[in-house]
Length: 277
Ligand SMILES: [Zn+2]
Image (cartoon, rainbow, N blue to C red; front, side, top):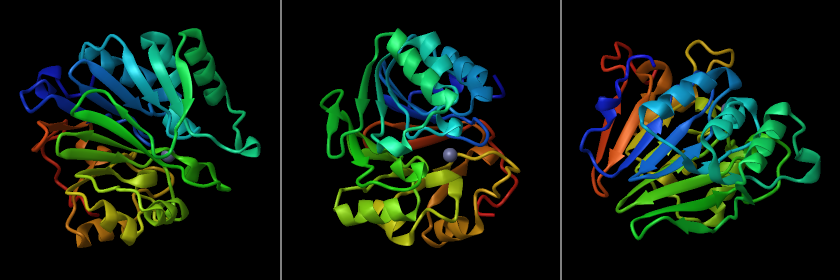
């Protein structure tokens, strides 16, 4: 595993660690709360050994809950392999209309793997909160409507631990962000996983202001084909004075919570670039 020794993120910074695992152009986040684990996406299939090695370095034996934000391969490509290796109790996917249901092999394989290990398959239920303990819960916020693009069906969810919270946005674009704001849901969070790798088609100002985070994470591959993250998003994050971490610059990013305070630890300590450009 590149760079990051497991001792670096087993420090005494609190009982919740949220790992943004660097899977290049894709998303993969892992929340570890005591011995309860939630995996949100797992990158392209080409990243499966990176993800499995990372999980192994944390001595993880089983993943309690997997959230597949939406059925695109840069989010779910490795999930089949991860489920085959680790098993899971619950796989949460977004409910999409029949004509939007994907026929991709990454989607089929993920469902088959979940089936094989006996996992419960559940659609994300907007407005539902799953409580893991008195202090740790997960809210399901979106998708709140039907769309013409799978990106907008991304599950938006918020992890809450004590006074701290983390919101995950998959690849939602402006239309879904607008619908979420209009829904009146409480989306305030200390940390946001910026939507769609920092694309200019996401991150409306009103959405970011509603979340009002201290920290933003962009999960993105260096020199990717899409030009992500786009200047418009970076300029807005700078304008709103949100501390930015990016997997293309910082590598793996871990944010710890002790219910009140957040501590950020990154694989690459020295980032000799302006993170907003
Ligand atoms: Zn994506």
